[in-house]
Image 1 (tube, helix red, strand yellow):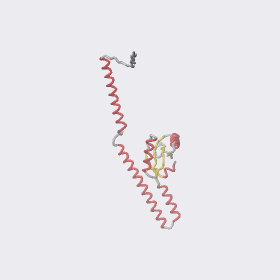
Image 2 (cartoon, one colour):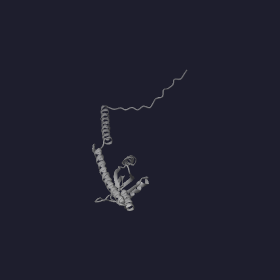
Image 3 (cartoon, helix red, strand yellow):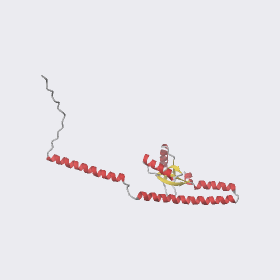
Image 4 (cartoon, one colour):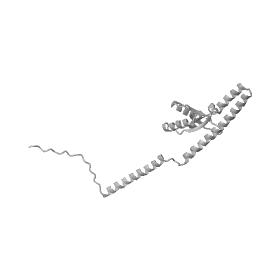
Length: 192
């Protein structure tokens, strides 16, 4: 006769709750889901929406107009110095006028740079510059100007605004640093 095969009993877990336990479990689950919903809404609002709507485009247009005004003023200065150089050339002062025109071109030149930090202590600014240089960036800092006492740290020197925007976006995404595009004159760069 064939022997009957015994069925193997599986591992089972059994919970026994009374009506109070079921209601308590329901209240706890409701609170957890409510908390998750509120946390999700809050994180969605802070991550996906800007902190103060409307300020971003306004600030960008203000910065662009400032850069435009600075560019126009440096262009006017360059044109005036160019006219003076042409007049001097016409008068026969060829050698001296050519040197003056070259000097005027250099002093009227301006570049875009990315401000990545500002420090009150010169040693801290120098450390920040060394840190950026260790990352392979062309970094420098400028001494305080006017009534300011801040040493500003800059990265790069760009002739075109588009290139500065591109590098700024890369720094903000890769280095998680807010970079401000600044127009610097050649004489400011020589102060460093």
